[in-house]
Each structure stands twice: as C-alpha cells, then as structure tokens.
Amino acid sequence: MARHTDPVCRLCRREGMKLFLKGDRCFSAKCSQEKRSYPPGQHGQRRSKPSEYGLQLREKQKMKRIYGVLETQFRTYFKMAARQKGITGENLVRLLEQRLDNVVHRLGLAASRAQARVLVRHGHFHVNGRRVTISSALLRAGDTVEVAQKSREMIEIVAAIEGAKKRRVPSWLELDAANFKGTVRTLPSKDEMAIPVQEQLVVALYSK
Image (cartoon, rainbow, N blue to C red; front, side, top):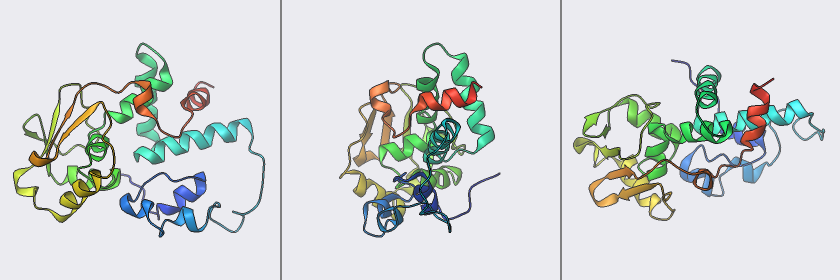
C-alpha cells in the first residue's frame, strides 16, 4: 500500500502552519515549524505571491496531509461527497472525520493519526465488538470503538490517553477512558469539524 515515508515535519513547514502530524512533539519546543517557520528547500525563504490555482492547491494539500490520505483515495472521498446532499466541502470533511484512524485519534486513544493507523492495522481496536484492521473504515453514529483487551497495557495507548486528558474530546464523540472505549454520539456538524482549511477552495479546484 502506498504511504508517505518522508519526514513529516517538512509538510508542516511547506504549508506554513502546524498540522499536528507527530503528536506531543508538535506541542513542544522541538517542533520544526516553531524553529523554522518557512518552507523547506533552498528557495524556502523567497517571497512570492501565489496564484489562484496555487491557493487552491495548498488548501487541498493541507487537507490531505492533515488526514494522511493520498491523492487517489482523496479523489474518491471527493466524489462521494459530491454525490451526497448538502454542501460538498462540508460533506468531504465529514467523511474524513468518520475514518476509524481519525476517530481513534480524536478520542485520544492515539497520539496522532499516523500512530492510530498503525495501531488499527495491527488489530489493537474493536468496532462494535469486532476486530477491525482497516484504518479507512467509516464509522456511523452509535458505533463504539474499544481498545482490545490484550492491548490495554501498551505504552503508546496509555501515554496517548494520559495526554488526551489535557485536551478536549470533540462533542460529537464520547470517551470512557476508564474502560478504554469511545462512542460516536453523532456525526460532526460544521462547527465541530474545525480544521485550518478552506474547503470551498478544494471544491473549486476539483470542479474545474
């Protein structure tokens, strides 16, 4: 399966903002975006005015990188969002938020989406009582996500839950930290899907 293998801190620097791709490191003084807040590469410190297409491309790249989705899969999500009723941009973000790896991260059962993907693939989570190893599985309202019994003493999961206590779990999710379990209360609304991306520019890019 295709995946991004280059240093992810370069992605934050390229987009000019924190994408929180490395968990707790992004909240520390070690964050590369804090040290060097300009794009990577020999021309990174040049100033240039982006075109309309450039702005749209950067918003698309930001959304892809936040959720860890590659181009082919991202296009598939866009087509699904376009077929649904409502605003395409909101539908697109909602679909990405419904991914199992994202829900695991949002609940605080993993420090980052990348870590959540690895843990899901290795079978450390159950959805509605069944072991699921597909990180892109879309969850629905009422679904429960639970850490497998044998995995509850894993250092990564315990540390993630401790870190989650310092941050707020989105209101569309409910965390039962004592039982290593979370529930999707409802699908997220627009206000609950706050990510630093202008989704309308992504729609404009793919609508050409």
